[in-house]
Amino acid sequence: MSVERVTSAQDPRLEDYVGLTDVALRRRSEPERGLYVAESEKVIRRALGVGHRPRSFLMGERWLTDLADVVAAAEADGVPVYVGEADVIEELTGFHLHRGALASMQRPELPALEAVLDGARRVLVLEDVVDHTNVGAVFRSAAALGVDAVLVTPRCADPLYRRSIRVSMGTVFQVPWTRIEPWPGGLHRLRALGFTTAALALTDESVGLDELAASPPERLALVLGTEGDGLARRTLAGVDLTVKIPMAGGVDSLNVAAAGAVAAWALRPR
Image (cartoon, rainbow, N blue to C red; front, side):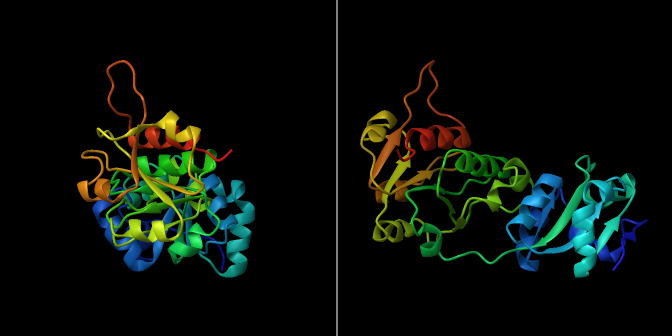
């Protein structure tokens, strides 16, 4: 199959790329159709590098050169490579594709919780974090700071949404992850697997991060709450302990991704 030129945003072959900025539409349609969209050369290469399978590619003319090896492999495997002018791609996707290339990828089947946590010592749990930027930032910090796995609750934003992937710089493909459900009932599953569960929250009983880091448990699952309301009361009642980051300057909290990074650094295995 050769490279295929596209001249219309209504081309039915490009259905996977329609309305990429419509979060509500994509949140529903991508999982149902078993796909996700990778954006930029680096992210596409990382996705392919871990064995994810492409459905098709969409790119501007110059990227036929920059991604020549990817295009050649796609052609050999019969995967369509669509090339269009910037205005056509922008009308189709809803944004200017300054990063040059998109790939519609087959969504991998999520692994079992036990498989993801096999051998893990440090785990982050994202409870109902709804901002895709924050989800991507947590994954990037997790990869950089040696977190072994990330778990997301049923109402958490999709780590494979395009913006999450882009903000994570593709590390969402690198850090093992899966969904944990039911929630917060899943806390019992973590405990059964030998994890101490700790919530990052401000409560009267919270221990300081330095105190926990001085004598950390062998296996720790740290739960981070949603951007607005923080952690649910049922979650706080179900964890083994709560922990807080000491603050200065009259600040009482950090962005969830920043807080997760600070805690991951302080609690890294030594």
